[in-house]
Amino acid sequence: MTKLLLILFVGLCFETMGVVLLSKGLKRLEGPRTYSVSDIAKMVGRALTNKQIVLGVAFEAVFFICLLTMMSRADVSFVWPLTSLTFVFSTVAARFYLHEQIDGLRWGGVLLIVMGAGLITFTEKRKEAERVKAGLTQEPRL
Image (tube, rainbow, N blue to C red; front, side, top):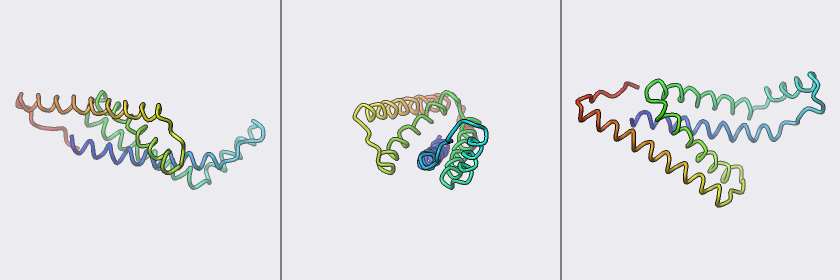
């Protein structure tokens, strides 16, 4: 499970960096003047040449590769809820890197996410202990 959590951590870091870069790039992107096909095509062209947007998408792709790796090695009911930790990482990055104001209620939500992730990790550790007790000590390969 340690390797899985390491892959999760790396993936969450890339996800957070991707979201921050996308946010910065999209906020600098001028929207279309009208919603004609040509204006939208020009905006898409500007987005495709914006380094922050392109790098943000690339980081999101790395996160997706980490997610696919984790899902191929562990139960979806374990992996998918843990990806909610990206909200924690992103909120911290938004506060300290993007200088967003985060109120106490939102921090409370972040705390609930952390507690939920802790419960999910605890259930996986308990499941591993039961496997060891039953003589099934072989972990899935990573």
